[in-house]
Length: 286
Image 1 (cartoon, helix red, strand yellow):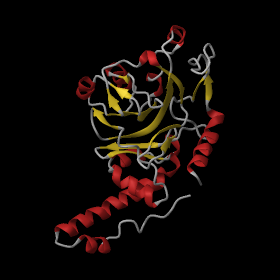
Image 2 (cartoon, one colour):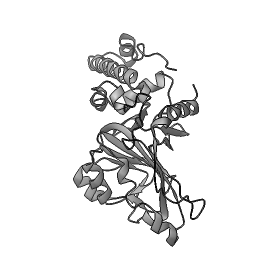
Image 3 (tube, one colour):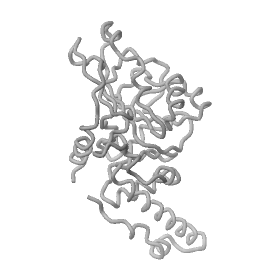
């Protein structure tokens, strides 16, 4: 199934359970026109057909098991399974705090807007903060806005208090020394001392967003998808694939340990790979 069709299917399945919240931000394309926020009963995590969250429908230990893996191992499994475009672009790099994190995607998106007074007054001041819940990674899609930072120390402290595990954005951040001291992982496109608050409007939360992908296109991230980050980068596992991808990645990790031992024992790389095939246990997923 094409990536776009998969995204549409995920959105269609969650749509009946997403309530419209009143008083959204101004539509940047039409001054004075308000558009509603979208979100579920659990912000950032849409509900399944039976009314449970994605986390409720997955094995209870899946998230800590994912956290124990390397992003490269998970990316290799996804590649072999037919999902090559799940790694975020390396321009979205570690900027502050810890490097390793794992959580469920909570999505907030927005767009740049001229700093006119009427829009400033109407903009919800804490929209980014509201997207996070326990065990989530906040994915902030800015549309590539880097004229000013949308996240700093105050936002990070709020996210931490909500139980959020990390922040990933295609925009800018600041207060990196403060965030380093807090240990909260932040992945962003850049760092700047400028404030972007009056130049950007949040548009939606709890909906699929797209972030730049390493494969040259974009990566669709739906609320409830699994997000793993470490020193090598960030990889996104679609929620429905998690129960299969994580065990395969664990098996790959065990095989790679044997490969490393064989190399240390004097085997060549080709000999070690022949003795311990890395991907024979993985099949393509629809």
